[in-house]
Length: 477
Ligand code: ADP
Image 1 (cartoon, rainbow, N blue to C red):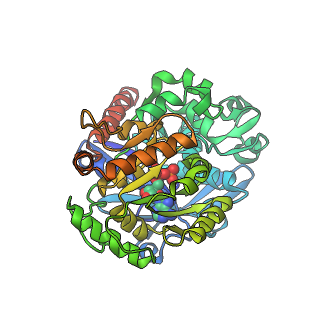
Image 2 (cartoon, helix red, strand yellow; image 1 turned 45 degrees about the horizontal axis):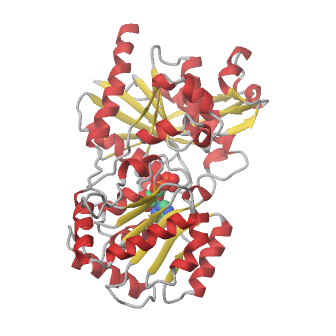
Image 3 (cartoon, rainbow, N blue to C red; image 1 turned 90 degrees about the vertical axis):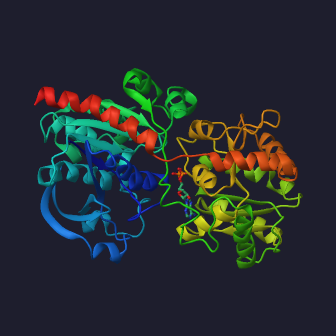
């Protein structure tokens, strides 16, 4: 049996700010179905994690974490949930704060986390064969595993969930944090700065990202975020494996958040919509098409396109609800639109999992016109709750949403190619035409109902990747 340690900065159900948490929460479960593999997960212990969870954790070890001239103590907590062992690294100075990210010293916080993971390895119940880090916050763990070699022959995998965030700091922090020989600067430096994500790309045995299309796109300057040359260099070790969703957890037939549960009944789905219309003071009418967005309010999500054409689209007989938090300029904008169109628009500027599920269950359409999208989970959740996604053809959106074709009757959504506001408007109007054409709408919904994005196939691809590496582990040991 091979042992894999996931290193990440968030994980459902403990702590979530976005899709990363969904993946770290569900992929280990899917892998575990295969008895050749055991997965453990290690995370920071944030204040934000609820006391319900904290009271179930056991103090497992106390470890000294060297961070340059500092020596910080960390406590290692352990909890077993759904047969997966989770470890949490606790340090009041770095993690006893409100929220998860957004501090001036986030770089140092997650370098500390990564360094603490390396120290924690010796203490874990199961020694990992493979350390699998996710995103920049866990990137230095890959580099340090290679440089310090806490476990002989330990293999490393690094998954890019979003290339835009890299954990960049002044190069002086190399001496400040590590006290390593200068020969290691090269692997960690990028354009004169210390770069956590680049460090992982340089050192990892294998690199994955979360959709085949994004794996191709990031080798190009438009999507490469300045790292395209190193991704090209490592192209032989880079693979795109599509994210899945936990179809048991997100199941409209059993989801406790839903007011009316359903499998594929449109009538029951519409009841959800009417309850939601009532809850938020919209005219109650099951026939009115409801468009939603559930998203971080970040320009990555194509919000500038939405801003450009929403007024025009709202001249149609539609309703629109946005659930999201993020950039203040977008928050102000969506509140303004909601004020201008009280009969049509609701703006919910909060992070609320239960509400998100109720929205997916109520919506006819989910709008997701991202500028780039490594995989995207919102469109998969929309399909899972039988709402039709409208997306830009990029990254994982392109791999999961196929445009409806009236002639062949194929396709599970709507899409447009160029990052252009009027292309979005055109496709929104087209979606409305289909909505009002019963035979075509019925065909589209049939395709939506058939869309399946469980982890089964992708978990198998991760398994094969691990086995290709772990074979080497046995040779070396
Ligand atoms: P990203 O990881 O880039 O934020 P994804 O589409 O991959 O985007 O994943 C977003 C996840 O976060 C989905 O599960 C989505 O439902 C959830 N989400 C986003 N914003 C909110 C919010 N305001 N409230 C509740 N859930 C949200």
